[in-house]
Amino acid sequence: MVVSFIGMATQEVAIKQTVNITLKSDAEVLEEVVVTGYGVQRKASFTGAAAIIGEDVIAKKSDANFVKALEGAVPGVQMSNSTSMPGVWSEIYVRGRGSLNSGTQPLYVIDGMPVNSETDGMSTTTNNNFDPMAAINPSDIESVTVLKDAAATAIYGSRAANGVIVITTKKGKEGKMSINLDIKQGFVSMGNHNMDYANAQESMNLFAHGRSVAYGNTYDESYDYLKKVYQGYGWDGVSSYDWMDAITRKGYYQDYNVNLQGRSGSTGYYVSLGYLDTEGLIIGSDMKRYSGRLNLDSKFSCFTIGVNASYSNSTQNGFSQATSGSMSSATVAAISSMNPMMPFYNEDGSYANISNYNPLALYDEKAGEINENNNQTLNFNPYLQIDLGKGIYAKTTLGVNIADLRQYQYWSALYNPQA
Image (cartoon, rainbow, N blue to C red):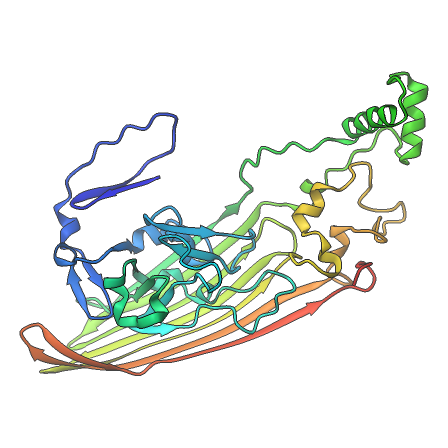
C-alpha cells in the first residue's frame, strides 16, 4: 500500500490488520517538476492532478512491461491483468472507468510525442495480445508522470479523456562520459492462490459419495464397493496426477542493459542497448526483447536541436486464452477441471486424453499449437527549441511512430479435437 500527501514523503507499507503510519515532511517533493503538454512546472506551483514515478521505482520491478510499475504506486490508477503472460496487454484505468462503451486506455506520450498504445489489428481469438508499451525498455525511462484531471490533460484534446501518461526518457548528463552496465536475473513464481486441488484418492471418495446419493444408497466404505467405483472411472487405486503443477513453473528471467551517456561541450548524448528474456508462469509462455535508443541534443546561443530515436524487436509466445477451438476453456480454467486420475502420457509415451483436452500436448514443440506475436517498433522524434527569454520557449517537434506486428497462430489438428 502506498500513502502520499502533498509536502510529505511517499511511503510504501505492507498491508496488515492494523497499520500505523507517521507522515514525514519532505521539502524536496515540492521541488520536483511535472512534465505536461504545456511544458515543465515545479510541483509546488502545479495546480493540476498528477503523480510522478521516478526511475528508482521502475527499476524495482522485473516485469517486461514498465506499466506494471504503476500498479499500486499511483493513487487513482487501477490495472486489470487478464493473464500472467509476459508482455501481454493490460487494461489501465485512471480515476476509474470513464465509459462503458468506449475504450479505457489513457493516452501515452513519449518525449512529447503521442504514441499508439492500442491493440488495433491484433487477433482477438487468443486474448494474448501484445502490449505496445512492452516494447519500451524500462531501463531507458527517467520518469513517468500520470496526468489525471481535465486541467492537466486539456492540451491533448479528446484523446486524453481517460488520462495521460507522460514518459520522459533519459538524456545525457553533465560531466564526463560514463558507461553503465545493469544485469538482472531471477525467478518468477506463482503467489499463494489458496487453492488446494483434490488428489486422486480424495476425488474418488467424492465420486463414491456422489454415486451413493444419486442412487439413494447408503455410502459403503468397504473395499469391494470402492473397487467397483475405481474400475468405473478406470483408476488403478494408486496413481495421482497434479495437472496444475504440470503446466506451471518458476519462470526464469534475465535482463541485460548497457548505456553510454555524458555531455561534451554543448552536446549531450545517451546511447543504450538492452536484451530481455523472460519466461511466464505457464509452460509455453515467454518473451524476448532487443532494444536500442539514441538521444542527442545540442545547445547553441538561443536554440537547441535534438533527436530521440528508439527501436525494439519483441517476440512473445502465449498460451491459449480464447473462447473457440481448443480454447473453449481457457488454459488455467481447464486445468482446474482436469481429472487427477487421468495420466499425462500413455504407456507408450504418447500423450493421453488427446480426444478431449491435454494441455501438455497443446504445447508440444513439434506438433502443438502456436500463439506467437512478433512486434517491431521504431520511434524517431527530431525537435527544435527556441529560447525566447524569461523562461518562455517555442518548440517544434516531428514524430514518427512505426509499429509492425506479425501474429502466428496454428491450431493443432492432432491435439486439438475442436479445431
